[in-house]
Length: 203
Image (tube, rainbow, N blue to C red; front, side, top):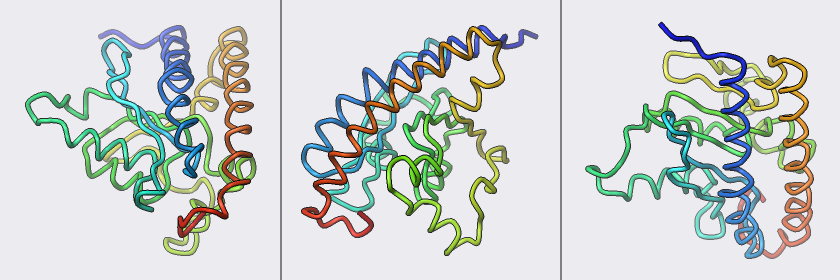
């Protein structure tokens, strides 16, 4: 039986960061320009790590169209005969999925979730506290206490996975993540400055 190595994981994390930078961020820049939040997602083929589909937040159309939900909507619009099996894909989210999105991802059959920014990052770096508030108010779950390893899926943060690598691999990936943080900070500033003009219930 073959086992994934540290280098395998490092290559995967770099590819996930590439997908965020090149496939998701350009869509998010357009989305933010018309009043949407900064969250996006992509489906990554587990075999060749290609991007199968990418989407971004579309809450100005429907408050249910978080980046992950909009991606799932688009994915299920494909004819079933041409739709890859969810088990063959990594569900990549720019930000740790909220309770609605993680439930929808689970119901859709995806067993692997990766994300760059945590719920705490959404609250502290991007001024979007709703994920954590809903987890606490509705489900009485404190920050970080839902089960990322369970019978349905394994979820892991890119930064958290990078911390388990050797120093050279770790520093390269964290440097890339910091660069993306700067881009998302600018997008977040744009969203925050314009959000009073939208009708998103939890803006």
